[in-house]
Image 1 (cartoon, helix red, strand yellow):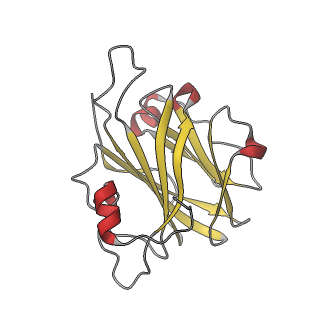
Image 2 (spheres, helix red, strand yellow):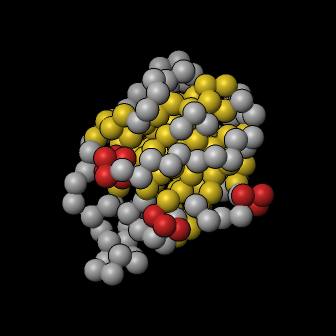
Image 3 (cartoon, helix red, strand yellow):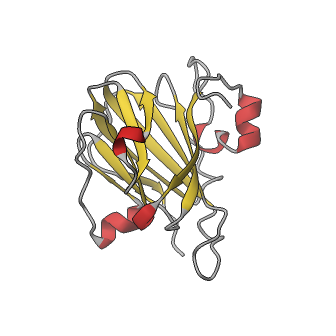
Length: 184
């Protein structure tokens, strides 16, 4: 699928993306900015402003239990597997409503993206070749819905975990907010 293709609600429902979106009154259709797989080396993928390479460095037990850490220009998402995982990034024109029932863990944070380009990558990916996502420059919200966290094989190599990342323009409070927490 082309990354810039507009999707209708029926398509998103079939993919399971509507679960954390819900309807956004008066907003244009959500846009898939990225859909694919990323190597979550060291159980981590990130989304950051192209002009600011520094990533969050909070590795406390509390931060790890939230499954996301945030800094001024980046979020680091902690995955369930240290393997290649499916990731979808959906862009919105405004903060989308959310429905928590379809997800085991839902977290959100606010960052600033002055360049208007987000870099999406696994922790050890080569940054110059990582995916670039065009977004409105400035403050933005990021929400991550995670499911299938309880489907991992005994060795942790296989699983049906998936990660849907929503982004939208607008100021959000600093720090990570857990909207729904999962515990094994």
